[in-house]
Image 1 (cartoon, rainbow, N blue to C red):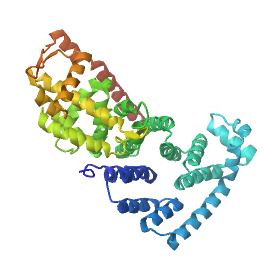
Image 2 (spheres, helix red, strand yellow):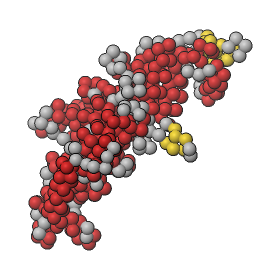
Image 3 (tube, rainbow, N blue to C red):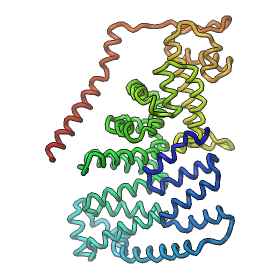
Image 4 (spheres, one colour):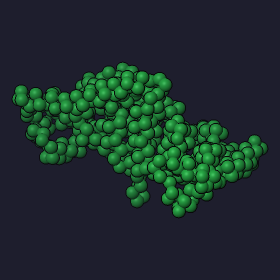
Length: 438
């Protein structure tokens, strides 16, 4: 069951090879697959990079030997030679960038910078292109810090929009791999703005770029302190949600999990349940199935089973299952928040459709024993606006349902109209701008 819901094979094709390594490391720690299979998968990925020393170490661990194949030694010599050649080609521009006084001569005007570099330092387009190739090679060698710095400098000088976009993807990957989550978020949002505003050769290419962006964003959103808000803001936009539904339905797991643990996004959550309803027969994921059981089918027995599966999924997911060390113990914060809010969802929905509730039955559906359920419900009633009474003698809860008057219902149904109007106006404006460009 642990590996049944693993999404690595669906996610990996949408990632840079280097971004797959943290996922493989996680799977290795969790023991989801045989150690030998994961080591072979690492070598397969490494064969397409320049991290030859790392590949040698993996080979030694896999085959329990101190010897490495002759091909690996030849490959290492080839990489070192290529690195030296690129270093020499990029030396003029690198020397300039390492001189703080010289860098101060740069301005926001790229054309001025190119002219100034050519006139004063004899640095032309070939040297600037060499900087890009050098940065890319550094990234392939696993020197993410150096690659990020050079790609940043390259984008400040580059006048080719396609190369500049490629450099931005590379810089985002480097920041993710260095776990610089604040900078990674900035680059991610910058990339999103370019993808949304850029004129693509076909709409399919734009959709593909959005799908790549959402997959890469998982690293950022589930590590950044404000990530759980940001993932909803991005994934729940119509054009991104449409891309998920048509090309990457497995990403619904992460949007659903973010909604469950995020109490501030309740108005958007109601709309998201409609998506869950549409996708419930095409998506097999315990987290989305749990929401369908609670809010669409009102099947609390199945929801009870799915909640246990959800916990297993979260613990074995490389993004949801992030561990935090506390002394000698490791906790999974998202797991704890998810289970707490999921129980609240079950309780709220169950109470909405029942007048009198047996405490024992409810405890079973909440995955709690009787005493834990009673304590949990008492605290919930105290801290929320829930109108309910507990009869400890009979072990029942009596709900006092509050029916909103017609004015409250009208306000509830119309409060999202301004947001929808704004969204429609934005889409019309984007369409008009696209037509004008054509």
